[in-house]
Length: 461
Image (cartoon, rainbow, N blue to C red; front, side, top):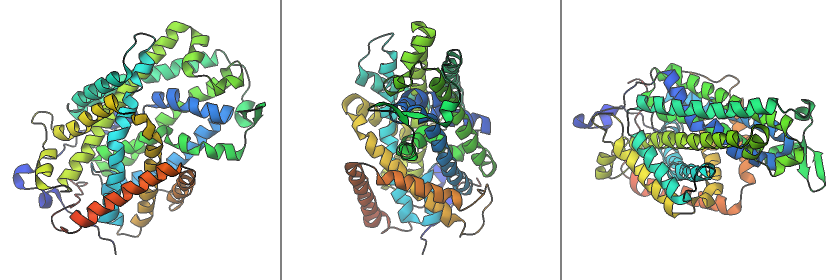
């Protein structure tokens, strides 16, 4: 029996606390924010070289395959996000379809990512500024976290302007790579159809097994489109616009990544260079050192842009969890306070940003990249299961995915395969998170069914 409970904000929140996030984001502003979280330039310059190293010129096919899986994931997010347009994101959607225990489990999985991913990104800033100035990596990461936190407290429409400006710079960097690559083409498009991988004995044929081995990485190239559901409570007419924002950002992000990847494969002097090279090296060879430095600065800006949006969106999840009474009363009261001028959850933003700055400055957090990959994969599978269950409930207004149930089944199959090949330690750590989450739910939340974890559905507000 599904244990979901749908309530209105008035039922959950006392009258003197009934200040809500304002619906001020049109689809255009929302696309800017979400695309900034995807940070296609960061994915292009940081993750694609990893694909080149393992996939060779087949990285193009790997990106296309990852995009195809991402479309299926996006279909699940778009349908569930129009049903439940809540800042709680995945946990609110899952609660309304699979019940409160699974909803809390989803929040706990997302919670790990809330604090780990922003500082992981922030730590890369100093690396890309090294051509201009030598900066201590940890301290720079901490400063980026604090700057991002201060920016995220501002009015969300102001954030859309800031992140949109930064986004334009990183897209220019991707365009520069594309144009330089087109000016140095060394081989024909046949290499994209019958690619090669760099093996011990030189170039070897690209196989399906190699493609599948890179699927986990290529799927996460554009994974930031899920940010849409965190912002859905502030998007105008979410029944109509949430799905639009999801697919627009997925398509634009995929385009910014795929086109420079294609031109790079066609332009490198030797395909063997794909195994050990990077975009800074290739841009320097094609356009000179000054252009390479400018591109690196654009990457650093892209990282800052991504961290701003991550802190902003993650604060909304923390705010929603407190509004839904997931914590003891004093904690809920603090985390639901909105800024008197900007109407943003400023204390929840600090709860995300300050620990992130500490983690960036004091912890070897990048060692947890494997765990974050497994956690994200597990959460995607849960969301896919929820989208299967949703059609069994009463019909709801909003976008409905075509070809249902094929998209969620594709997600479960593809991501499940990737999970099966994950490191045992990472799987065990994720299992520990699951156990701890369910323990908190059954020991504290489930014993107070009318008082705690009352998940609000503000879709119609």
